[in-house]
Image 1 (tube, rainbow, N blue to C red):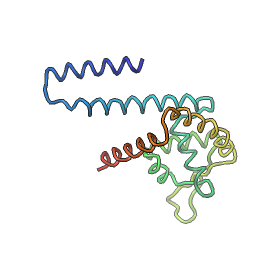
Image 2: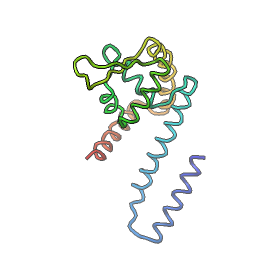
Image 3: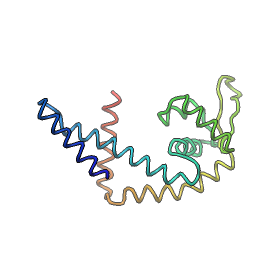
Image 4: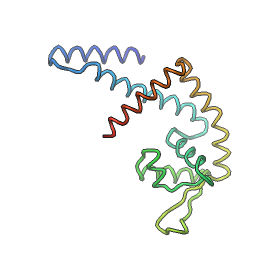
Length: 165
C-alpha cells in the first residue's frame, strides 16, 4: 500500500516535471518520504499504546513527567519539550487528571504557575508500558545496524537544525 502510494506520487512528480522544468525531484521525494515515515511511525506507536487508552502525545507527556525529578513538570516546560501548543498540553493535562494519572496543583513559589505531577497510578502505567514500548522501538529499528542508526540520527539532527533556522 505505502509502496504503491509512493509510486503514484513519483509518477505525478514526473508529470509535473515534464510540464515545468527545474523541479528538485529528489528533495521533493525526500520530503514526502519523511512525511510518510512520520505518519506510519505515529500510527504504529499509537496502535501499540491503544490498549492503554493513550496516544503518542499523552505517552510523551507521561514520560516527561516520569523522567523529571519528583515526577513533576510545569505545563509550559512540557509544551516546550514536546513541541506542543499550550492549548494541547492543557487538553492532555485535563484528560490525564480525569484518568487519575496526573494531579494538578498551584506552585507555592509562583502563584501564576501550575504543577503537573505524576500520581502513583500514572507511575504504574508508565512502568507497565515501558517494556512494550522499548520492544516496539527495537523491532522498528532491527533492520538497521548501529552505524546506520548513528548516520540516520546525525542526518535527521542536521535536517532539524536546517528547518529550525
